[in-house]
Image (cartoon, rainbow, N blue to C red):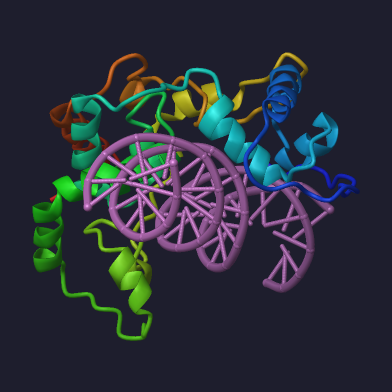
Length: 229
DNA sequence: AAGGCGTCCAACCGCTTCTAA
DNA sequence: TTTAGAAGCGGTTGGACGCCT
């Protein structure tokens, strides 16, 4: 969804940590009017921030239903399993951990879980299929994007079937969320960050065990004509 | 007590994708 | 078909904090 161009903010945009006052302004605005157009949010809410910053603050901190506190063993197990399957697809991983944000999961991975999974990483390196990117002198990408199921090197060149979030839903489920409309008539669209999702992702209130996650993923891929080896 | 160092996390940056005009 | 602008995503950075010497 694309929103109409809005007036450019006249004030200089602020950076850095958010104040409680800014949080309150953003929360009030989003609760009342929704966020069909993030670039308009700071202007209308009277914030000296850019839309991107507001979106991030809302998703990572202000959004209702966010879990605070330490990750449970089960959550960590899920992250490890999914990371092994999907690589650094933090937004996909976060969809299996209700109340956790991609940023939070990413941080937790770099802080704790990465150290716990060195064997997995090494195994991935060894078993990585021969698809070395001939045209890339870009060592950065091959170092930082070292997952087995990733959009990196090989995947980019061979153009595998793209898997969008909508692919994980049935058509009915997708359209059900597409019809989500705020009380002011502003359509929020299929906002997967907030929408309680049925079916595959219906894990509200319960974290997937790694086995369940594996099974779900395999079933989902099979359903869409793809398989996980 | 104070300075150095490491860790964690919030937020920014830059790139890609999507879509309306 | 092209283009511009917005959203989304993942990598990176910087500051706050705690621990150690």
